[in-house]
Length: 227
Image 1: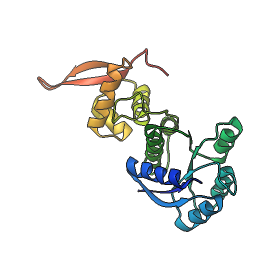
Image 2 (image 1 turned 90 degrees about the vertical axis):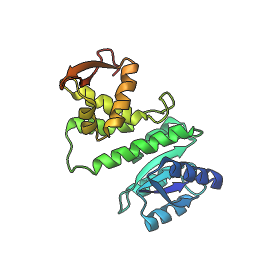
Image 3 (image 1 turned 60 degrees about the vertical axis):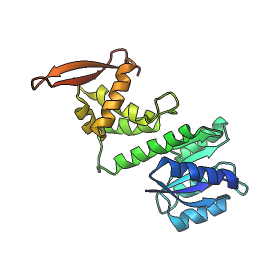
Image 4 (image 1 turned 45 degrees about the vertical axis):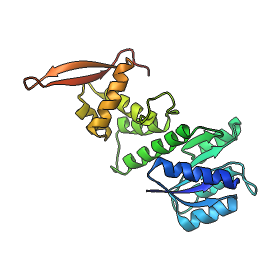
């Protein structure tokens, strides 16, 4: 479970974000804070893995909270959730180390995507002590994904882009099992994304015949695929 601290000056909004986080799955909300001082106190006391941080707080800017958190003894990640849309604030949040920036108001799907992509990156970082350039590109790609609203229910842009990255780095067509192993997914999940990409024209499918009557689908990124 990813231990999460929710920070928002509005009690109702903070509680809504708590409910949203618990709906995503894999996240445990360990505290709610409504001021910057309270956020720093709870972060020090509770030791969360993630802070969902509002920028507009009554006693200090969320950017000051972000800087203080980054200077703390215990590592903590931050996702900014705010109505602030000015470029200066967005840039300051990026420079301060915010892993995502979500502008209010937003649909639950956008909130879910940000948390899911963060969770996937966290899981992958825990699998190995080192990473090559392809793996680093995949990790950063997970954090650059957009909202899921254009995808069928149950599919995420983070996982879709991961599957595309695996295909792009392959020198030959891959089976669903090959993709599943490379992406750290189940075969069923990998196949679902591959079929979705094939339906959209981003992936070409060929047949490879092995055992009698058991042809296997092989997948390759289409030459017309974006990116």
